Image (cartoon, rainbow, N blue to C red; front, side, top):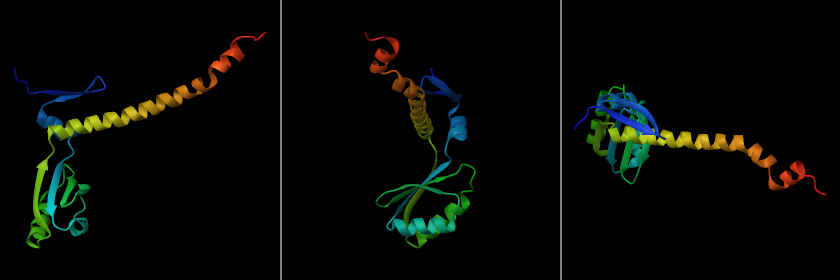
Length: 146
């Protein structure tokens, strides 16, 4: 049986339900631009100089990955990238919409971050109790030593 709705669960709780398109629109991070270049520094400098919307996610040996907000116009990005390609600063590029995998990873990452915060809150709540109720305190406070 095939279905057209997907549910995402984190920490045993249903976080969202919807069609793949709805989940990508609502929880996706927009677009991803992957750019291959011979000079990463020059490419990053030129893109930051000419564009305001992309955010640098990561860069490796000769690859640069940018996040582009969902409601941004892609025309200026294509214009700049084609110009940089003609100037031999950019060897190749691709722009893709976020995938369902990206949506799942974002939920998992946010779940881990909130779990770490929850662990810190629990430790903060328990630490005064743990500090005041050690075995030595039990002997002194709860029993009279003869």
